[in-house]
Image (cartoon, rainbow, N blue to C red; front, top):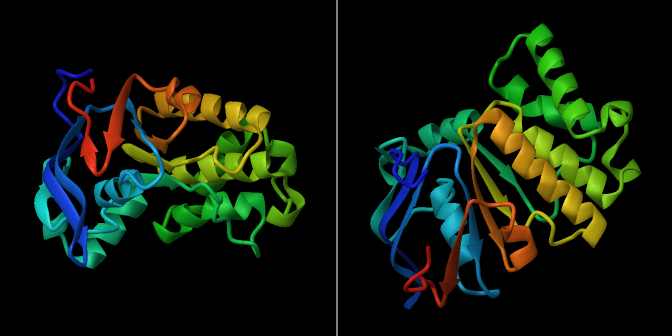
Length: 226
């Protein structure tokens, strides 16, 4: 996979807050369909890098390229559209809409993209079945366990068939059994859907589902990291 044309690249990326550099001189390339774990202690810059890779933030130096296009050069509207169409995100704390059922949460990105109703229903039913929640489609988030909410979040992130899936500590708020199930689903579904995955974690066990581990410390990728 490392020889494939990258779908995502960080080139000499740096990001600072006030006068403190959080990331500096960082290079990273992700191939289509590749699963990459960003592994390191809290505060090392993993989430900051993930936000840059997803176009939620802009670097102070260097560039981030998605499918060859510079994310920083895109307008806010263009970046928002790109995230809806091509980049799915799974968060540590689920971020489900509490007033929507499991089914409606997964439907939401497809409605925003203007999918036709029959296509939405078919896609959502397939995803909820894939995460073993077909029988819980009409449940409210408050009626779901943490593991179930995260599985809904995975289904929602994959709804629009994104080319890139970003996951920020997706098992950090789950017990070990639920976390293992979510990790297995991320690996299985990203492979099935053909999506590249970049996952932030501090746990070697979580990183084990990935093809490659990139270790970070103090805002940099460690020398000799694969």
